Length: 194
Image (cartoon, rainbow, N blue to C red; front, side, top):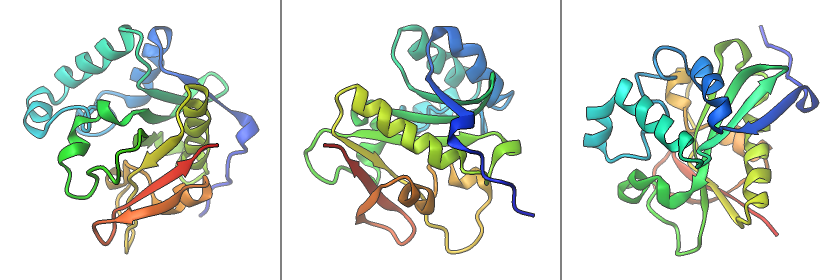
């Protein structure tokens, strides 16, 4: 049964700042969204990420938030956090540099969307698309000119846990265009701002 799509005017989007840390934790739950990640997968090289998995990753993300850096946006339905989008300048996501699929396309300065997470109760309702659009608006406010994402384009139904970079269809609906593909299911997509 298809769930009704949430209307964008029913959602609000706020940067994760120190006062919103508890909302971030509430959304991510005990497991840190998925397997103790706490959205640190792209911020650490593989060995460091594995070593810090769980509590170490949570502490690392909290340190980022408490330092005043904005690691991404939360989507709210009323006062309830229901979604997350990691968005920041590409250079903070150090693991992208060594990825065979996601190494830089060119030398232009880009902001990257590295992760999308939506509460199970609100999946398949358009929250990811709304988060992507909010991320583009956030980047534009920060003076960014290019927003880049790394979705999956599954050839069959993937478990939600494996679509944490978003899906190609969501990016297309949010106005992104494919610029390069180094793997059959892993395009690099961009939204260029005026």
